[in-house]
Image 1 (tube, rainbow, N blue to C red):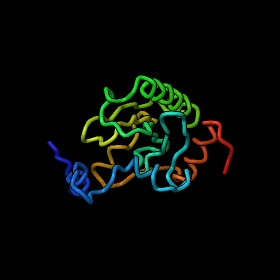
Image 2 (image 1 turned 90 degrees about the vertical axis):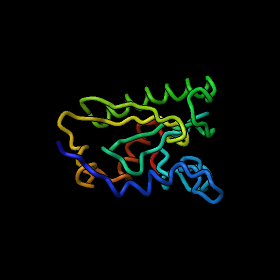
Image 3 (image 1 turned 45 degrees about the vertical axis):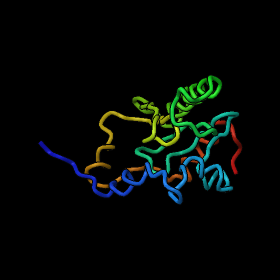
Length: 163
C-alpha cells in the first residue's frame, strides 16, 4: 500500500484554527474587506446574501465556491434565506460549469464547522480519468486555462459584461 504524504500542507492545516489575537482573518471575509476589485478577489458574481468566487488554488479549471456574506461556521447558523439563495446559486453554478466545460460530472460539497472557518459550497467540474490526484501525489496542478481566463468566462456566464 502506498501512503501519499503532503508535508507542505502542515503549515496550512496547523494554522487554520488559530483564534488568537493577531491570527490571520477568515480568508473569505478578507476578500470582502480588502476593498479589492472583483477581478483581483476572483469574485465572479454577487447576489443579495451570497457571492460566488473562483477557488484561488483550483483542482480543475472552473472550481467555484458559493459563500455567504455573513460569517457563519455552520449551515444551521445561516438564515433560511441565505441557505436557499446559496442552493440556488449552487444550482446555477452547476449549470454554468456544464455549459462552459462539458464535464462528465460536477462535484458539489459544503465545508462547515471550525475547520471550514466560514461555510462555503464547492462546485467543480470533473471528467472521467481526470488527473486531480496528481495534486496530492506530485504537488502539481494540471490546469488548461489561467485564472484570469476562467474569471472572464464564468463572470460572463453569470450575465456580467466584460470588464
